[in-house]
Length: 440
Image 1 (tube, rainbow, N blue to C red):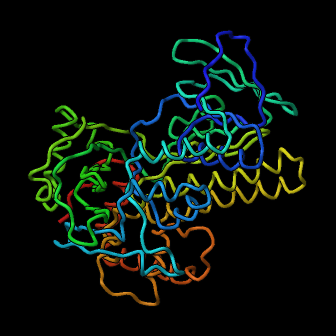
Image 2 (cartoon, rainbow, N blue to C red; image 1 turned 60 degrees about the vertical axis):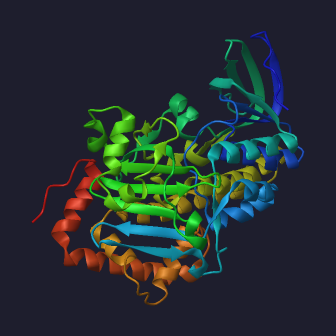
Image 3 (cartoon, rainbow, N blue to C red; image 1 turned 90 degrees about the horizontal axis):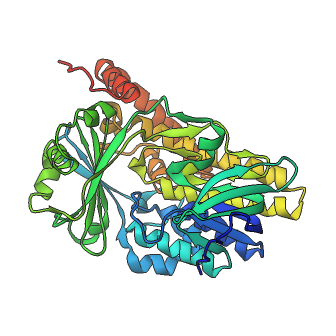
């Protein structure tokens, strides 16, 4: 149930936990804490359903959805994906990798979902678990009072103000990074520079049979494309590019996206009968991280702490993991438990581990050496199986994958040395976000 905001700016409400943001991370942490009997209030500036990218889930996300009690509903709206098709312009061919081959017994499939529907399910679930949800309400400031409760000042679309007094505050505002805007500390990722342009389409040709729901990832001169099919026939298509490429745009976003698609012939062929189902959108400053994710009486979960390139569909997975561990820490804090410091450290270590593990692969995804390894059909010492376990979302505790992943990294560096000039040019392109110089 959504509660109306009070008319008086002096209207003060009290709660145990005030969660700012009603996306996957905010909805999950709210549901888990409400289940424990805590008085949870959630402020969401938009109204569900609302558009969002990040539409491809990972196999290891499904147990968390099951724990939240929403997996059956997600199955109804989702299209199963069993793997990923990789399309390389260097090799002139494509290759499909399947989650079922992952080391450590990952689930063999995940789902492609429209985020408007997926986020609505999670938001409704936290309300059903007892969290009090407020939509169309934007947090304006958190007044931290060390050793005491915090005051969260908010405003609705009609300009009416309201204040919440909370024992604990959770920032789950995603790429809005609300508390970073107030406290500072957010930094553009110096190791990865990218931007994106994307839309939804009708009439995109799909892969055949069991592969219909697989994500397609295609490299091209200025970055890479995603192709994500949905159950209702619509397909999400986007290009993650170097910022200089997008900054050189001289046409409207729709035409620029079509022109960009034309630079990738395999994708253009699949889309020769496609039509835009919504206007194209662009997003810049894609990759960032905050120096800290916690403080006296608050934590940051999901993209409020860090966002990395979406190539491996890590966003929702990392958001739900941080929400799950964050809820355990907040519960301990509210109970005055001596376990709180240990749970807080576990929360931070796990989040940083997940971001770091995905980041190593993401930073190198556009490197020629990486393409060479991924397009190879051979797997030695279970390296491919271990990498697939990472791509399935098993980035927190799969010790069996540690040695094969190390061998994969060593192989990557060796392959890089074989064509060091080309890989160095690609490295500079990734770091600086500008077109790489042409090499002979």
